[in-house]
Image (cartoon, helix red, strand yellow):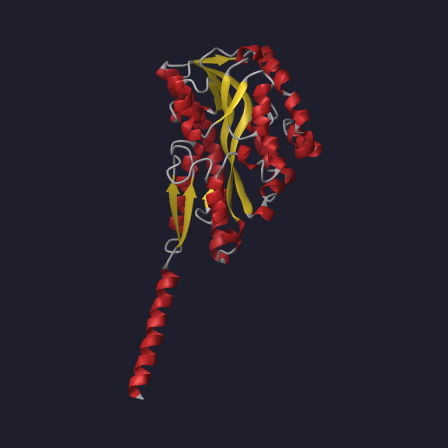
Length: 331
């Protein structure tokens, strides 16, 4: 009898110790991304890790994997949906197969500047887009800026006709393909990690990126010209697996939401400075000529590319395009 009691007590103690061990195990959030740590997204991921591990010490651990070190462009979404990672921040161009409405952000010359982007993303229409993929197990948490895109090439691009026949790297986006076809250039889909080599070997002749991407990936070393067009937006959506996020303990989720708001504000504040610093570094390197367009020249590029809006009006929604365009008018 005593022996049985001791065995039972030992089992209870063992189970209790096991429960305590399990309770002590932190929630692990793997944050995978494809850019360098010196970019807006890279800095945002590190800031998120720092704040989470300060404020949720012992409860949550964040592991950051930059530069496609865990999953590249083509695999990170699959990894999120399967639960192999918990946070990614893909370019907004990556979501067209999940909702055509997000193709809005790829429309060329839609936003005049980052201030207009902010006004739209903070509007009810912009915030609704964050939740537009929850039926597919994707929850948008925030928009993170990278910046306005510039054209780079080994040929001076001053007029739309200068792009004719050139091969430009694009993300997997139907809008971006049509954007280059509108100026009779040839779009080539290519993962971000392959762009430098593609430019170096001539597989592609040009690309479109914010200055921070151009500099951090050393594209300026293999591109003779950068034309400052500000023709498009390269922003990210910080996303998570809906089931994972909704299953977090309420106190943890509340604190993570607060941290994301704080990190987002800092990322978006710092993005412009990072881009301007990168531009200065490119000028200092003297490998690349930066071309400043006249208003008339930029107008020609806009006129050449704007027909793309009409091609995608039906899947995106005319009202959504109108709301985004209206954000160009300061409130």
